[in-house]
Image (cartoon, rainbow, N blue to C red; front, side, top):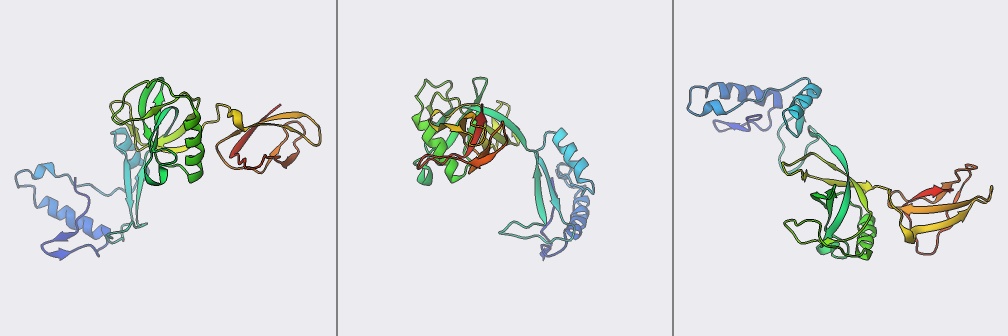
Length: 248
């Protein structure tokens, strides 16, 4: 598949507009039609309807398209905003079966989370975590009891018993139902962190609240669900919750 040409007969075409290079490429491909094997070279036409093209590519099982400015030159060694890669991104909620050891800066946390759905392996996710999330999630996993491995994978990992669930994004799945290019988005707040549970009393209506903290966005106040009063959290020293849920 041919979509660009950078040089022809010794002439450097990289500074030429993309539209010009495409026209040169089209003529060059046509001149090869009589050569053996040339029929296997497919010229990629430029589309003026990127949305329709994207939908067609996805229907054919592709991962996405590249948007290019017609007047852009070809640049090397850095990413230009004149070319934009658009990929299909899907999301999934997964259970955490365990974790792999981290190296260098991650030696104190973890390398990746081992994911499963319905008890079956669906991949590892190691990207998308903030430094704080690496520390918090790593500390939680290492405090969980170990458990027999529910499955074997190509690398060693520690299986733990945890209710931890995560939301990830990915581009597609392999034939074995494993995620391709997964990236961590956030913790799914479907479990309680016992160590992060506090009792609070609303200073206005005096209702007793149970505040349960999850990983997420760090708050400094919450709203009483009864009287809607917003007030500061009464946090213990050294406790830095990242999100919260309030229940009567």
